[in-house]
Picture 1 (cartoon, rainbow, N blue to C red):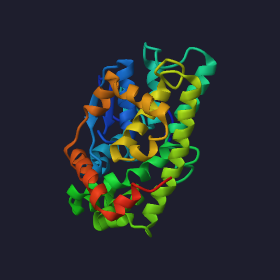
Picture 2: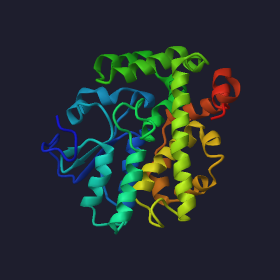
Picture 3: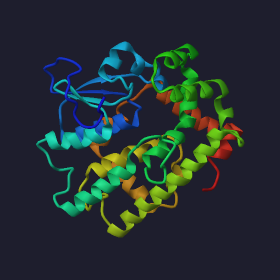
Length: 305
């Protein structure tokens, strides 16, 4: 099945113009919600649970009819699906009456496209991390996953082993459920993957910090908030959410100032901060305390880059 752009088939019959199937914690869902808020597009929504927020609703029969790939977000335009978040945000700008988040001139648009692409998750998230910052984020979220998964019954995780098409993701959660923070010991392959992801994301953030320093502007593209800012907002928020900001932001003053401006935006608060979840809140609280207590986490979060 072709995945790019708006599909040629309907997955539901509906009289609603826009429906977003999303998850409160999903990075890509956050990006699309922020885009919708910036464009002031009214939409209906269906929250779909991932295992980290309680159950494999993405692997349910009902949702697999919407997306056989079992991923969120899915954006429906009059019943026709767009599956990839990268495609969704560009599609929304074309369908919106507002052009405020797309630069007017070609040079700025090309620059925006560069930063959007750099922030994206493309292909195998464990590969091409030196090209795509988004591919670094999965591994950096593992400690928070381990804290959230404590509250999930193992039977619900095993459901995904039977029904979810992306088996490797299910196996990861089984490992985190069984081994907990021991999965981050000095000799573990998961820790090595996290360290590699830290190194790569740090390089991307240095590039962004230097770009902001050189341009002396509020946002990535001059003084206009664009798709580039939307794409990087959710990455910076995830870094802070897991607790990596102390390591990754401390030597990047222009990036820090930039992120403060993002967090002050009403659209950011409405589309990301206001989407709370009990398991996520518990997970963040546990992780924050465990970073101070657990030796595996304490050493991981205090390593120099």
